[in-house]
Length: 217
Ligand code: SAH
Image: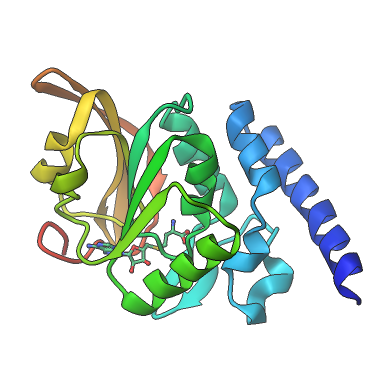
């Protein structure tokens, strides 16, 4: 297939994915628009590119996976973003959710511990001329104190408990989404800050790779 036909085919598959997300309960229009705009196929390895618009997790190499689209969409919807926020993402992975966030908020800070994945994500974001993301390689389990506070923090890997430095780096009214648990079972927690109090709501069961590092496993 020539490039223009390929792009048209990807566009059609992307539309079908957006319809599926909508049918699965995603109502946040900004989130749906972001999925319609960001080319997920550019964020997955070539070997699995033909499956980029299926609602499945795909291997990224280095033992890591890009989450299934519905999982990203649900997290972004739960974060209740209105476009004005500064957001911290822990576990950039492919950089796909980073690119979605870049469309949904003002400023994105993202941390990835595996240098090769960080470099690939960074290159892809640059290619798409996304300029409101600051991505660094390192341990994100203790957050990014120099850039705090954050209106939302999205963690893409499962921690043993809610890391104190992360809840401390939330702004007033800020939301932290984090899977808690090990390979045998996890639950996604929504932590919300009100002054010096934090409420925790269990959203659903989850299955993520482990968060490593100081506050990880
Ligand atoms: N949303 C990403 C998720 C990738 S999987 C995507 O769909 O592409 C989770 C990522 O978290 C992996 O890339 C893993 O290397 C990274 N990770 C695990 N522990 C981390 C830590 N302490 N700091 C930063 N990144 C971490």
